[in-house]
Length: 146
Image (cartoon, rainbow, N blue to C red; front, side, top):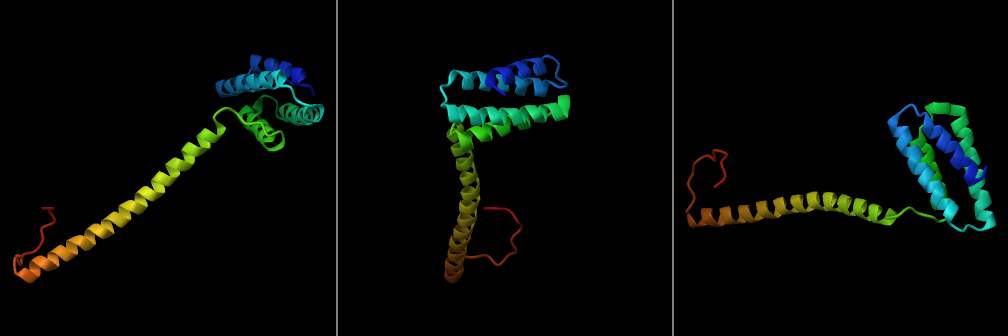
């Protein structure tokens, strides 16, 4: 199935979707197909892409309007990334932000834990110093800080 045929199929599919979400992803799908049409692919890459589009078309035919367009869209993106080495804009930026946020979350708790241990050890040392000098009161701690 050629890019043009698949695009025409998607335009027809978009005309009567069952859900807004499918309509939105169908529009993204059409924009992706337009971008692929504008790109100069060699014959081998175009043939592989057309074979993948044929498989996606068959999935659409099997499931009809119950098709999860989002899944099919992401299948094509994975194919483009894996087989043709094409990535969407800001792909690696999004991955970097995700990894950075995860690292901040993990190391944030790690440093919080380390900080609590260090703070507790310093407090214990200072309490011992005060007790050795005889400046501590022998009363129960009522749970309030300072």
